[in-house]
Length: 103
Length: 103
DNA sequence: TAAATTTGCAACCAATTAGTTGCACAACTT
DNA sequence: AAGTTGTGCAACTAATTGGTTGCAAATTTA
Image 1 (cartoon, rainbow over the protein chains, first blue to last red):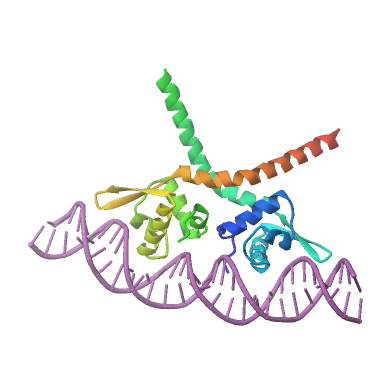
Image 2: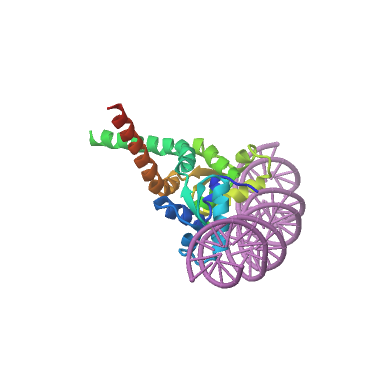
């Protein structure tokens, strides 16, 4: 059972769930209304997101609110850094080239 | 055959391949040396990365060099924006709180 | 207390995945 | 021309995935 953030965000439904609860914490039932699948399918996605700590839960009576764990999202950002470093370098090189051409 | 960047980067080997060719374009054989799998397995990963345009090829004699298509990586960054907006807001809120506490 | 609501979990299933081996083909080397 | 090297593709396989239905448990409502 591989369970890392990259595998978690590979699924479009899970990305949609993350985007939804990013706006506001939601219950599984409320989330399921946004999808064509069953509530149980959504529940399974939430389990995966919980396992890799992208979301946390908060019980409120018989309802369970799922919260986005924004800090965990930063891990993706951190992985992107190595590539961002490249495209920023290339951009500044292009920038340099352009200003050289101007002269 | 779902083929989007998020599914592509879900696999650790493919992330490693991306990181390697980010430094320098490489042939499948050269890449395969960095992995415990067969050359054909690496070739399959490269095919997936090519299909979603994360890499491009450049034939040179009988060798084929795989290049990172850095612009495509920006798509991940773009998706992250919506979340980055959140964590930056929270950070600035914390920032505000701290400066208020100082007073 | 009985019924309804909200949820998670298990069992099952079809499709997909990541790997393998075994080719075939083109391009260099001798 | 014959052998070697670099590569992609097809066929197969075991494991994983994302979905389903059918529960059971806990909490709220009547």
